[in-house]
Image 1 (spheres, protein in one colour):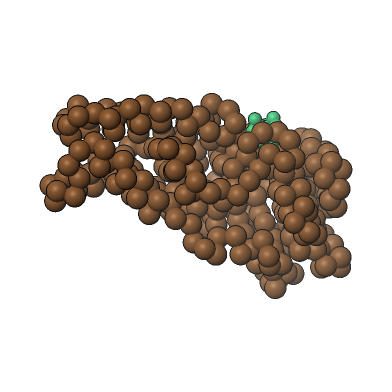
Image 2: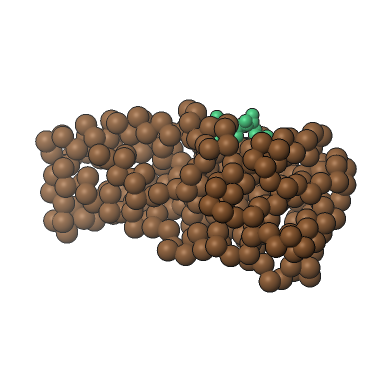
Length: 288
Ligand SMILES: Nc1nc2c(ncn2[C@@H]2O[C@H](COP(=O)(O)OP(=O)(O)O)[C@@H](O)[C@H]2O)c(=O)[nH]1
Ligand SMILES: [Mg+2]
């Protein structure tokens, strides 16, 4: 991520006095870095309180305060990745173009390299060519794919994929979906139908719904997360395209405004370009 935008923040801590100039510059830097207005305001309020209570006296004191504040906000549950070691169905949702299919390909490689047996379900049957795109990833990563083709019923694809997962003893079944947020009712119906199939046919499997957000879209990504959360429970975020022009603060905005942990970050278009998100390391990198 373009953590560079935060560079200015390091200079601020060298300022002499804790005055309005310092606070104004800090606030502006955080907003420009996509931390989000709400979180930035909360942070500024906490800083003012800490100053009143004489916990911080200089800009230099603010640095550790900020690090602690952000780490507290972003501490993931220590069970955030438990699903990786269970029999799991991962449902990947998100609007068109954010990187769902690509992230699924990368996750397939990621889990496979950890010895997991992975199956893909091409349940984005709405977008022309989506099945072929997932097929390419299946070929590239040497993972089995269940597909019916464009226009098929997504829940029927998931049904077939569950049968295949059960028959072959797969560990992780990853389902692509069509991102039709502009048509909320359709999306809701489609997801509800898929959830019903999973509940009926594969209730022994853990269900993990991951939302893909394009990190380069700034506050739009936060809005998408809010909209998807209104439709279904989101267990985690895949933050894609962090190798692009993304500003580093977007991960903070998502976690603190929505309380949904960022679980993976995409760093490119190749199979190896995905990693679990290390919030603590990410915050250290902003300030180091
Ligand atoms: N640079 C970069 N490009 C990505 C990343 N993830 C996805 N993309 C690209 O974003 C575009 C849309 O991805 P796709 O998986 O088709 O999105 P979907 O419509 O949500 O399934 C493709 O050109 C991908 O190669 C990433 O982490 N980094
Ligand atoms: Mg796709």
